Length: 413
Image (cartoon, rainbow, N blue to C red; front, side, top):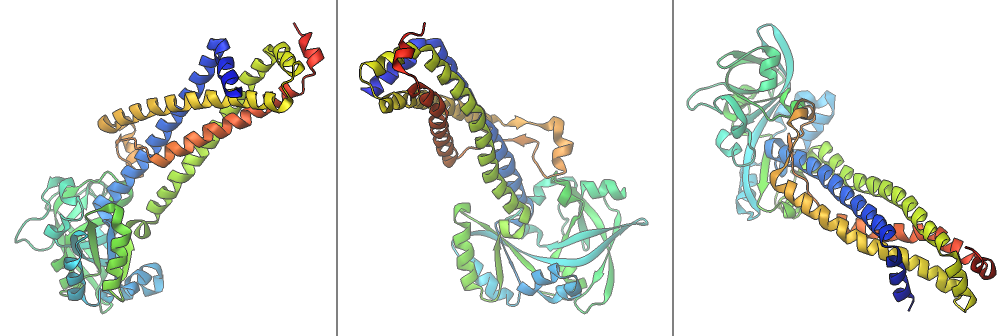
């Protein structure tokens, strides 16, 4: 009975109810789209980081990672390679979840010298063909070639480095580092290609050479410091990591968010952003509901007084006001979610072009085109948030209604 009365009360003032429903729906839509946009931007960054650098899983000698952390151990890093590379390859080949893998070598404490200019660099020794299976660097070469066959000591540098050091194709680059015996070594490479990942944080440091050329200088022929792995199903990446860890005892197996702390930070940021935006939305919505429902109560003071005079107790009056607010939320929330889903779906197909802000975004590794991305738990959170807000927003108007004295309320004009 109360539900029926509450439903009829909503539509007694169609304009006011329509305004409330519209405002809540627009709020829900804006929240869905804003959070989907934020999630899409972050997910694009993570995908590009996986695609261009980290891959899904990496395998290292635990001492190699410790050497990377402790400055006093850096000179030992060149011989902290994967202990049993053949056994590691067998484990990877026999695992059905592994899509592709690539061996890499790495030179620590590297200085890059070009025509009197010097800088630091992360030097990756890669197998060009195997690397194509796990990262996308070969498709990001904007000048020259990925690597030319039958040519030794080739180096792939970034567009940022080319501009910084004012060098181009075929120019000589001198790399200075220590070999596995701790002996300082210099070796000259020639630029075969220039790549651009549009992530200046990485591009200003990373260079790529052939693994066999780097290993020869390091004195670790046939060895690797790192294995980059791409899995077939990213949803099962943690299960695959556990399986590989069991078949590679003594090796350190890590997933992409463990390799790059900023990826884990962004994952946490997605959740934090959802709750912050939802809280702000609830805060704004609750005052709108209070104002609207309080107006409705004040307009119906005589009616409410009459209802209480003929026997409707305060508990039922309280429930009636709360039900009216809940019904408004139950009507408006699905409308806002539907509009949000349609708009997110559209821009997920065509993307949002932010090329006007490309320079600023590239400094943080963000893509120029953002594809909003929503999730099921997001809609659950929004639905619950609207219902909670509706209940909280109805409390003050409902208490105001039950505080009326029937005799005084009936006499109100």
